[in-house]
Length: 66
Image (cartoon, rainbow, N blue to C red; front, top):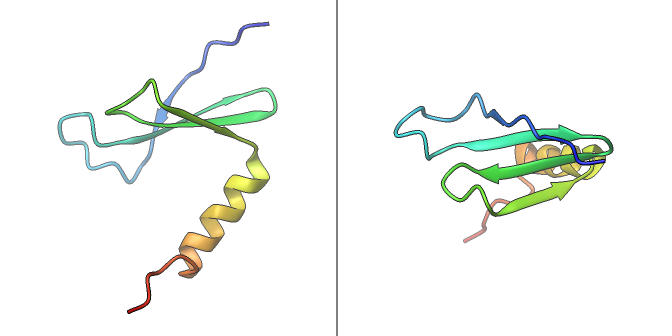
């Protein structure tokens, strides 16, 4: 079955020209992410790995060290 994705912009988007947003959509068993500037490039993942990534970013796990 082919599902139509309903994209939602991040609340952290600056609302500028409309092309500076991270968007997310859900389908059965998957989450889809894209940048509004290049909507044809899409990342598909599941909820658990995405939640793990977000927790790592929030905790500073990926900060560059000098």
